[in-house]
Length: 245
Image (cartoon, rainbow, N blue to C red; front, side, top):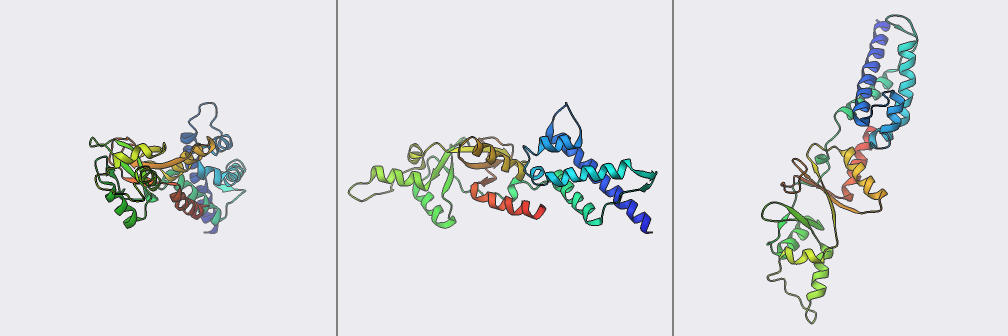
């Protein structure tokens, strides 16, 4: 019974390893190599989860070689993984195959406004939800930018008369010219949390601030927002990652 259990652990390990190998090929999308360790090095540069478990994956490659290539005879292995190792590689495998979607950490539903909406409505939303930025849309459904607390303050400063200001008649479209250029990225509902991390990382490396990521069904600018991610939401991704690592 013990031998059969050990053999099953080896088979579980090899099955998970092969599934991870398949995911690495898919993520790497290269033709010059399909070697497991080479793919780990390639994909770790652009995938947050793989980067975080890189050393584990390289150790799994060594163990896999021992399991597969050093059998006494078919069905009996000279090297056997411990149960916790098998459970760990299966956990990594499952996360690679079915990563959590960005919508799981996004703020939703998205509070947004149209160009013709009153700024007073935005101020009420700031007070009610505690958000500091809101997407603004044209009547045709296209997002044209963000209205933020900072932009509203700039507008007030510009139009204040003798220390007084009246919001009557002020629309969100009046605030937009006072907003700095906000970088917004649109992604589809199928985008996972690791892709979100990489998007933010790419902009950070370029020295550019990504203000927000808006999730729509197909990642188009003229679609209804399903969720919104800002840099504050990255802490949620970090917590999820820590549960894997």
